[in-house]
Image 1 (cartoon, one colour):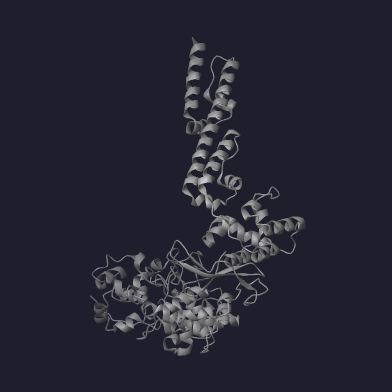
Image 2: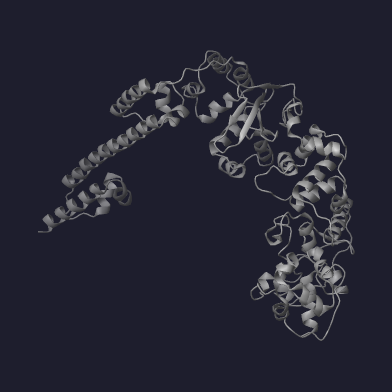
Length: 587
């Protein structure tokens, strides 16, 4: 099939090489690709061209293509991201790997000067984050200089990487040379050098746990002594989840996840280490032993890791709470609950010895700092928690504002109530609160938090539901007769038990739901009776020969669509009475 042989250029993407090879032999790129594709791959399409540079072994018969081009398989793979995936992927399914997710561009970025010299697509241009051409020291172009449109990579191949696929303007226009920002030049040159090493063949490869161990080691300043405080502080500083990195290093994740290449590059750049150096990095046995030994975490002084706290990265403000061991419904185990007396953050340790912040205040702090006007719903969506928990986060930080005016008498009343064993649920229902946020703001005042911390806990007697269920029935009946809203919250106050206690006791919860339904039916019947009276008043006072349904619905103040849904019998009554009235007057 091939009569002309060509050689790949330095740094060329395999997809670009196939395009040039097809053009040199006077055939379409897709025709050539269909000739060399693997047997299990379907018909080659433009939309799949990106797969050539990502996982070439799944879409190209490399043995056949190697013979046709007289290039080694290694030379072909060096023009793709295969070697990057090989070095850091943890299984054989490279096509399913996520370590490069979001890192490979779908739109063309290019250097016009490079295209003027030689017209081919450089693999480095496809990498997210690469912004400059290190050879010509200019920023990469992303749009056509004529029509200002972006180019899809599949579209640009059809023009031989020469013209804009939209307006046919030449891509090799002159651009402004020179970049004055030295920091940008330093970072971009490092990135170019890093990717040159990442795409080259190497027999060495690392598992996700080995990658995480090496990253923690370089964060630890390559010291053989494991420095917990240094690791935690540095990960917080660069906004990397230390606990996730530690889990990966210990291989204690339920599902193995590889370290994303973007995270790997960020840490390596900040620590002045090339990613390829990780492959040959030797970790001292003393560091590795301390890192992997979960039992020694009880000997490490626990620290407050809230950035706004006066005792940040100190342990002298942490005190133990009553809970030492808790097994969740999911099977997870949480141990040794502590609380900081300076900021009120609560911490627990999981079965791997990892410190967790219980109330999402730290994650909420990051989002609120960058987005002070964020809504509760958006905060809940980003943190993947309920809106109710988000309100607590917002109230907690409201309570830390210096310009807030506190009602000192109310603060004193709350503290006296806590000392006198007044429950949170009862305090929450005091009439002094204008809304829930008002209550939560006072609840998270540091003096109230400390009062709760140092209050001597007494075991509450277990609720005897044999007696309480009769009391519940009596309360519900009374509220039904007086037409007071029947809710779990109002019942819990009347019974002097918490809402959670009611929810856990199925019989009590079911009875409340039954009474709520009964109250709803009772109110609906009362409302329907009032509507019947209004309907009859309208008909009796109407003097015109005929009337429209619309006039009657306007009079009673209800939409027909809503009435059909909640009280269809009333709607039927209107239809019948209107027919009867109009027929009578017409006759």
